[in-house]
Amino acid sequence: MDKIGKILNGVDIMIQKPKGTYDLFGENAEKVIYLKKIIEALMDKYNYKYFETPIFETSELFHRGVGETTDIVNKETYDFKDRGDRNLTLRPEGTAGIVRSFIENKLYTLSMPVKAWYFGPMFRYERPQAGRYREFRQFGVEAFGSNDPMMDAEVISIIVNFFKLLGLKGIKVNINSLGDKESRENYRTALLDYFKPYINDLCEDCRNRYEKNPLRILDCKVDSDKDIMKNAPKLTDYLNEESKEHLARVKTYLDSMNIDYVVNPGIVRGLDYYTHTVFEVEANIKGFGSQNVLGAGGRYNHLVENIGGPSVPGVGFAIGIERLMLALEAENINLTEEKNIDVYAFSQGLNDNSYLMNIVNMIRLNGFNVEMDYLNRNMKNNFKKADKLKAKYIIIIGSTEVENNILTVKNNETLEEFKIKKEEIIDFLDSKLGDINEN
Ligand code: ATP
Ligand code: MG
Image (cartoon, rainbow, N blue to C red):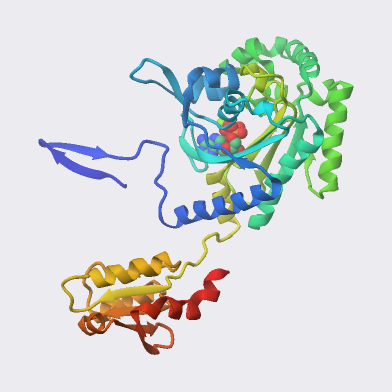
């Protein structure tokens, strides 16, 4: 257990991380940095722009944005009052904040589409388990201003191509259509009629959903295996012509990009704001846990309006970074790059390390990665440390070096030794390491 124990006035105080959170460091931290780099480069290719919105927003935003009848808003939010008595919520997802920002900064006055991406922590009060945390990270995109199915297909293609780029093989793309407002309304009526005789067989949450938003019944995790769920009317049978045409186009465009998918009428998504296309990308890896949805999203043509903006359509997705990392692990995909140190520098027999500090600072400013000895190690332990860091060159500074302004430099592989004038050290390192570092 990673507890910090402390005895204070005879009382044993244990300070631990909050339940459902984790500390990011070491190899996992490297992995997150690496993923973020890949994402940045990928987003450049698609011309999506980076957004960062506050980690807390007014609670009202999520009630209007995510929806009153969703699990996220009903059960999972971290709500608090600040010292000014404002109702605030730690963001449980990224879309509502981006949409608020889109409206507040009048980005709808720009030439459409506006294509945004984000990466950051989200907070949900859930039962922690593998792949499910109370603080987790999401990478997501939102594309505003086009109702064209090209946009739905592009957004799906980003997830698929991202996973492809990482080398992840076992994925399955499920798509479905919730249709437009009219189709959803017809379907709602059909569901109400269908579930009416079974109302007492449903769980308490679903009985509530029956009153408020019967579509959510199909997303229930408690009742999902019951026959009444399996035999429920399918939304696809209630789509009007326009909605059918939209779905058909999305499929055509996915085909044109050679993206495999299945149309899965069971996908209704946990959020209230979707219209037309919804999708989930799941890990299809043997032995992968039950939290297997890596990313999900859909089209939300009324969300901007619901939050108080003009009528602008949008489509987006969010990927859970932790679940993605578990999937990559399950396929033995190694994300960390081996990082070598260019130079390891240390002094011997000096009381004052100003000369060492000066050299190290200069070399770092010239673009090399340098580590140095802070612990006054002896010669042998310094060489050991240099090997451990896989340093390519070692610089040793003693009183002779300081007096003559000449550095002792060692190639840590060939052990060849050089005497280099201080003012020529950068040229020397450039000639030896320059090409390697430019890659
Ligand atoms: P689930 O059905 O698993 O609860 P969700 O429908 O609530 O997922 P979304 O709101 O669509 O999830 O979030 C998109 C992605 O974020 C999910 O597919 C998942 O990878 C990730 N995610 C959601 N909740 C968590 C969590 N508590 N911990 C870790 N990752 C999560
Ligand atoms: Mg959830």
